[in-house]
Image 1 (cartoon, rainbow, N blue to C red):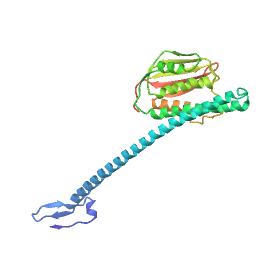
Image 2 (image 1 turned 60 degrees about the horizontal axis):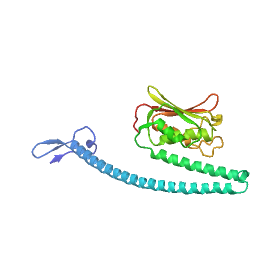
Image 3 (image 1 turned 180 degrees about the vertical axis):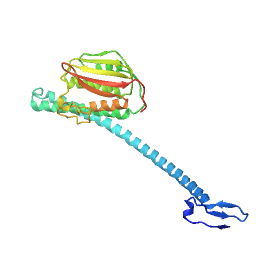
Length: 271
């Protein structure tokens, strides 16, 4: 067999022939290039299987770590909450515990600690709520949340929105903020069904939101924010509404109070 082959002829269009003893001629560089592509294809498949295997092992390891961290988080929340509650009760039993400035500061810090624990639970719900969305009754969520508070909370109308378990935390946060930080005496929830969106407005007659934090109220912030204690509640609300394909907005209520509006798309979205 006679042939003429150069290194570059494998990768360029100039044909390089080989002649067999029976007289047949074959373009040698095309044959070699095809063999090269086949070997590269096999290597690519093997590499893909290897990377897939590593990814699956990493995902399993991450899932185990997340599961462990959830258990640790719940244990810590439970134990720390118990200790903070004992501190509050102990302060109340002290002489002048209800009026002494230092005792009041201790009670205030313990209360803020409990609020932080609640927000850590809400953040955990946000992280876990990554599944598919399902139809949920807004009225049912509001009535469930309202049962935990002593002020009048009414709901006008009802609507079915596509959400997940984090929606309860979103609405409960808005109600709790209005009561604890806005000092609201009355809260009204109004649902409005439009052509493309369903709106849920939480309206209160409280103090409203300070001007200093209106531009950043939905940002992630510390729970000991001295201006309004926005913490993680409104941040969680915004993140949840983003996941639902909607949004959350704020406007001042006249003559006083706040209006937070949740806007949900009427169609189900994929997440």
